Image (cartoon, rainbow over all chains, first blue to last red; front, side):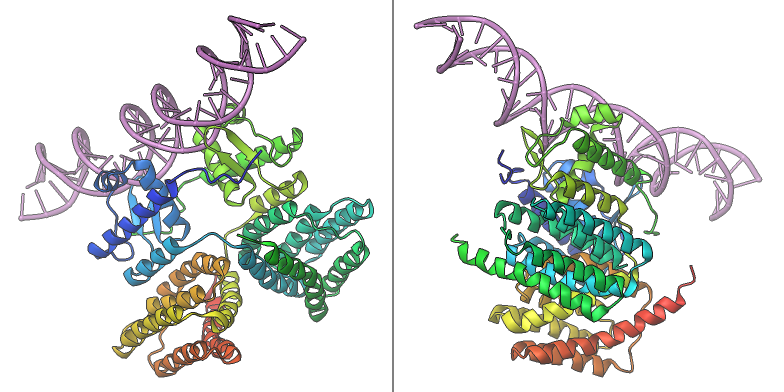
Length: 239
Length: 239
DNA sequence: TCAGTAAAACTGGTGAACCAATTTTGCTAA
DNA sequence: TTAGCAAAATTGGTTCACCAGTTTTACTGA
């Protein structure tokens, strides 16, 4: 079953077109924070698109907190000025698909921080959950099975323990995108699997002992292999 | 016009309920990567909810790349195993609203990195755009006006110049959430506005000269005021 | 028995009609 | 002239039926 089909054809295109038209409207009408946009029906007719497309465009801008829809009332410009709104919409329209290097670079950055914060702030309950995840990982590894998923959950447990809801959320966004690449390019670490195990345990111990420096150091060691893999991966890309 | 009304009432609740039911279904049916979920209509009937709610739940899981909908074919489990999928869905359901401290902490982390990367990688075009943003900021400031929005765009221009599409995207997600707090608690820096201006210029100069260390240092200085403000903000919260 | 194929059933996506709540309008009465 | 208020219009949200492909089914003919 192929899952990498683009799908949704040009839906993204028409949605972005509507977003840019909403931007133009905000500029033309000089809409400020709290001002009301025309109704979805009016926008749909004015832009010559279906109301559903308008709704989807608005929902996307709501995700970035640039607009706010209120049930039986209307859609409003959020608490952000015209200049910033303009610039942000342009940035959003310019956004391109995450490339693998960016993803890994971001993951390393985020995870070194969540590890540091987890070592500082973890509660007893956090620690229990991390240990659980570590044990699942160990069991799989010792059986000689692929423990990629358990590894992922171990890292997410640390992110949770960081006490930073934003980083936790961002980790959830980017990790699955990375995992799927790994699934496709199965990393074989049969020989050095003991080493990997030790590194996981070192991270856990450091967090347990609230040893911040040691936690960061251990996570850094753990990432070295990942970064090495990525460099090889980069070289193998021919497109 | 009040914009902080919860709205959508319990829509989030029913959506999360459906997500948890999809999780249970995947477990019960032992669905693996590439396996097909029942159709939206079937799920809607089985869960006793409308098809739209099912679609929204699926769309949310698609955002995290846990599911993949293919137009006239079906919805499939993405390239991730049952164990990871289970853990990730639980984490997603557990996600809570971003608190202000987490947002700022994350912004500082991300932006120190984008600044570093921008100093390393910025192209001539990137530099031009950053300078443009800086100039807009200067004009506003020198007129004694509030330049919060221009400041935001300056930082986003740096994020763009980092050459890291993921960090750029994440910055777009979190900055507006921070800005709205600042709009509400207007920071007055009338007296030290010259200092602020100098810091912005220092950041720009460092990126221009590809002086990585200086860029990071300048951005750190710039953040000191932000962090100070946040600490005060924290103290002023009484709820 | 089985390959070939055409039709029927099913799929996610889409547009029109409907809903409940809000907002505006315009009449009434003081 | 204006405050009060009810009816009508308008709003975002929701439901339902339909669309254009895909997938399965079932029949045909060798």
